[in-house]
Every structure is written in C-alpha cells, then in structure tokens.
Length: 359
Image 1 (cartoon, rainbow, N blue to C red):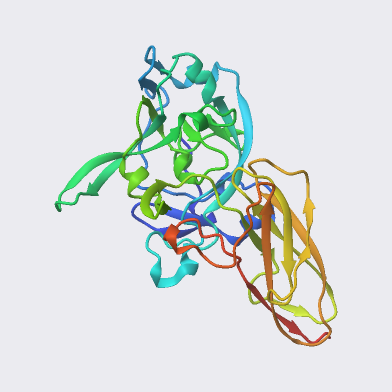
Image 2: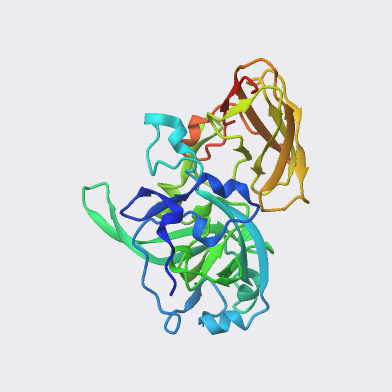
C-alpha cells in the first residue's frame, strides 16, 4: 500500500486525519492524487487486498460477495468527477460554523476508474420494493449517544435506489490511472458523481438493500439539513453539490499594475447540472460580464473559465467576484443559506486586489 506525501496538504485536523489542498489545486483541470483532499471520520482502516471483499445483501434475490480480482474482471469505466466535502469553505462562516474548519481546498477533480454499480446489482436482482441502498465502510469508531454513553458504529450512507441505478455511480478501484491509496479508499470505494463527498463511501465492504429509509447517524444527524414541508421542519440528508465558482487567479491581496491586462481565471462546478455561464465582476458586484468557458462542459467535473480584464489606470483597491449558473437554472447566491448550517457553503467569494501605480 502506498501512503501519501503529507507535505502537499494543509492539516485541518489531526485526529482523525483531515487535510485540504493548497490553492495550487485551482491551477490545473485535474487534481494530482497527492494534492487531493483527505476527509476521514475515523482512523483509516488497515485493509489487505487479498482478504478484502464486498458483500451485497438485504432485500435481494441472492446475496453475493466479490473480491478485488472479481471486480476487475467486470467491464471497467472511467469517470472524471469533482468531489467536494459538504463542509468545504465553512471557515468563511466564522464562529457560527462547527466542524472541520475547511477553507477552499476540500475539493478536487480526478479520473475514477472501476465497475459501474449497475453491473454488480444486475448479478443479484434487488427486490422491486427496495427504496434505498446502504453503503458501509470498513472505518468505524465511537459516537456519543443521547444518554451520555457511546456506541461503536461504521461510516455508512445510503442512496435512493433511482440514484444508485444511474449509469455513472461506480465502485472505484483506481484514481488518476493508478490503484487507490488508503487515504482515498483502498481497495475499493463508492464514487457518486455530482453529490457531495460524504456519499462516496470509502473502504467499501457492504451494500445493503433496504425497503425503507436509512436512519444512520451520517444520514440523519450528520450531513443532513433542515427543510420545511408545509411549514413543518423536516430533516433531509444532503445530496447534490450546490453550484459554485472559485477565482484561482489573481489571489486575494495580490498587487496588480495599473493599466495592464490581466486574465482572471478559475473553476465552476454544479453538481448534477452543467455549467451554463460564469459571470465576473471587477467592481465589487456593481456590474457583471460573461467569462469565457474553457474546454467542453464536463457533466460532473468542474468547468474552467477565464475573463480578460483591462486593469484601471488609476491606483486603488477593488473586489473581484465570480458567480456561476447551471443549465438546470441554479444560480450561485450572494449569501449563505443558514438553514443548511455549516454545509453547502456556496456563496460568492470576494477576491480583493490592489491596483498599484505602473512603473
């Protein structure tokens, strides 16, 4: 097993190990594995590929178990997908936010390779009345209970059966052309493109088909938000990534020479929708203009964009902003929706720059 080079990441929590990417992750369309953020809820399990297996059970016609070589014998596919931690950018919320204090780097885009989940499910025939599939990781630890005690539990999340049967959800064994490393789920993990990273369960060991809704801790307590249904508060699990954009260059506080031409550039992403447009403001939001989208749209990967700016000839300060829109009509908001707590932080991020006199 290959362990990562720790110098490429910023430590946000030591126990369990949580690290985010440096600002340089926004310099390239693909994120090198050693730059890819690490999100752990418990200690990384020590798994051996020879003894590891993935079992599918529950409301199915017949249970089945596969080893790593079995998975590799299926037709393989590769999907380029952006994974973002649901709490990414929550440090911008200040003292009102609880959880790992992520800045901007709990995100990355990689080429994931493995077996489409539908191929595995075709082998076992799930029952017609199945509502959800529960995905269970090998990582586990103690969680506090309401009575002051604690209970040992694995990390587990569920997907509605309709989402699980979509053609891009996969059991991945590779990342960026190489086998997964332990930090990213070795020997195999779930990858759910378009959804926040909490859905892409690492170190996958069990899939359970159920006829109701999963009530596990990481489904109903953590990674869930309050919504209102006929004025009644309802707890709903997080799912698709909210539309968002990020200015990678210039960086906050950068000094720019008056009168020069500068390329403002960055990335935008939008969960299950394609990025339709990115708008850029160079005057703190008073006006916006369309940026150019670079490369073809990626269904689940972030979209590069750029905007050419003629820096004013008068020295001073100004604020750069970007906002994205998807083909599903989702628009990046100006402010955070506090009903989502410290999750889905996707409001427009300001970048303040200084215009200095030209030499």
